[in-house]
Length: 400
Image 1: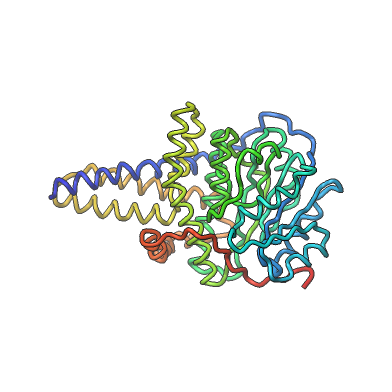
Image 2 (image 1 turned 120 degrees about the vertical axis):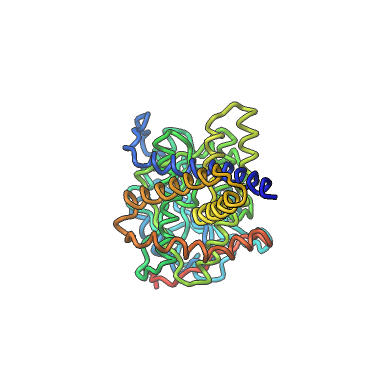
């Protein structure tokens, strides 16, 4: 029995080593200098901005107010009012956006809304389509930067998507903000420094018209943006980061909304990891594309809190196996993994989050991991598979 436990603990430690090393390499690479563009950027292309919106009356005015100054007279701003029963469409029209309304209670989700919006552009398509979520603020200059880069490289472009620091910053919010920063800023920047494609993160995404036509968007996938990026990569159009462009979202302050959002994101991430990593590896072998291997490795890294939890379990098993059997190899491997995870987090905090998050935030990580255990247990019992919109906090709209 002791021998079997030793073999199991060593196998778990070795499997866990893959995502841990990937996380460390990505975070370490993010410490390097900026990667220079290989080409001179094209002139500003014709642009259409699609904003899928489901009952976003409380915040869409602020989103549009940040976008409109960035548009040229030739650009189009299209709001897809998707199954709305509030004033979303009215507010968007009053602010000058073109509104297309969609009503379909059976096929619900962002993917279906975007597909509907794209079809509305087919008669006179733009050169570049940009997708922005209805609850985000697009920083000045972002639209032109990602549109020009998309046109230059004929690839999907992802702006850095971050969350603003909430006024009331509790331990959960602080660690969540740090985890979000690592996932959406530090790791994509590290991939960019290494010349590796990134994943799509949901908003601030630019697509050449010819590229977005190569895949289907009509899907109720709960992490439709991540799946879209993988489909585009498999079709020969791997996404690319624009580290100079930024879109800001807001962490939900309501406990129920925060839990709902994290459940959808993390269950979707895990489902995608389990189903798409084998698909990417098989395609990489068949086509001999190393970029698909790199994307598969990046996708193999689970959410940060889950990775820490898995490491704790591996460490406990290694210590028990060492005590019963005297095997030290699993202990050495898991200690090394712990050092790599801690170093990756410290490097990320020091360069990317120190101004917004105090160092004591790291002390809350164990409590945050414990808080997430029911979420991961729910994934094992009944994973979320249906798209559910996150409840919005009330914000002041320019038209309210």
